[in-house]
Image (cartoon, rainbow, N blue to C red; front, side, top):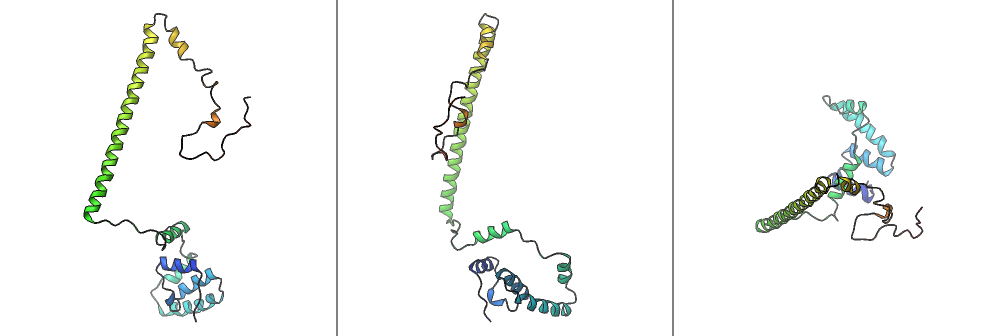
Length: 189
């Protein structure tokens, strides 16, 4: 008796290393695959086989554990991860020789050092700008001779963002176009 399985079940059996040829000798696998395929007659054969095997195995707790729980809980996410990791179309991981791995690691490390150097230089430049602005504001506050009036006027933020484009259109610069495009119907309220 040869049972045909769906391609998904066949690939899942391949992922979990369940040989389909041994399902006749493994009643649990037959029951599980029968449930997924929709065969109701596989349940009756496995129940009879499970009843006879529980009487021969005196020290097994499997039947007692199955009575307590409704079976093992299978996380669908883990099943899908395993399925796609071992799928035939998934490309294999990179395998390098020693010299090629060393070359790859050297280039990778050099790139990360270069990027860290760029980040540090950018951070130093931002700190320099911040200190220059702070010094300019402090000079306005104390050295302008007007008691800090010019400094207080410069710190008023009302109307700063009023004359620009609407804030709804502010988005990060990306390589591709936006999903909605430009809203030509927009009018200032």
